Length: 69
Image (cartoon, rainbow, N blue to C red):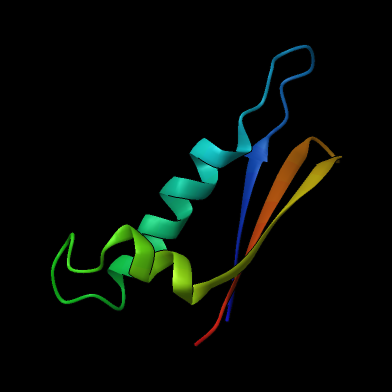
């Protein structure tokens, strides 16, 4: 499965994609875990294959997550 998220690009401002990626990962995992915090960080990391952060395009940035399930 692949999850995507776009964030408005702010010219001249630093962008920290890992903050957005962390929130996106938590949101995606909440769909599959019965209770918040049910998966450990190590278990979640084992399910995540890759994180791709694309450069700004048309005023947005895109984060793509690839899962192993």
